[in-house]
Length: 175
Image (cartoon, rainbow, N blue to C red; front, side, top):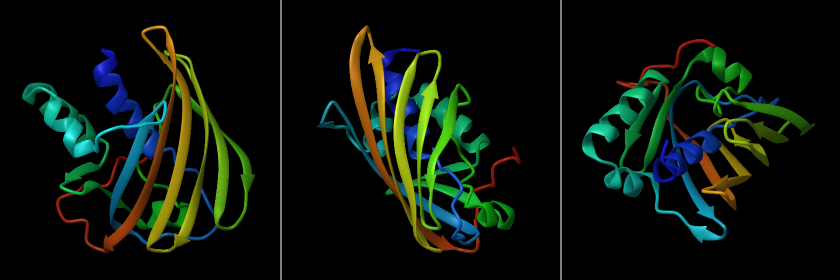
């Protein structure tokens, strides 16, 4: 995968590295917005990055995201959280399967964690906080290499509950 395409995919994965917390979120449709930077330089938002992807590749990426229960909106992405997932505070998209998530510290509202990924080798740390049943925040910092050069990618995101009806957004398949 080219480094130009890998960056958006890495950022998508980072936005959803979501550990389980004690306070419950609500089931239904959630919108997720995020900001990212590489070595301190702000990245364009996801909608802007998607405009740069060739139409056929964008269609493939959207199909892949739809299969994982992710819809696109003008201001972010949308996911459908089932009642079962809400009880676990489980946003139905996770970091890349090549990544291992290790809990570091858990409190009723906040969890810190580490990520260790393979192919390529990446490592990082982050936290997630349930602000209320209708709002959560997360931050992840990943250390990686692109074309042999070390990079630090930081992603901050937040989720807000839009309502109980998921509309056209399908819940992700049970893991």
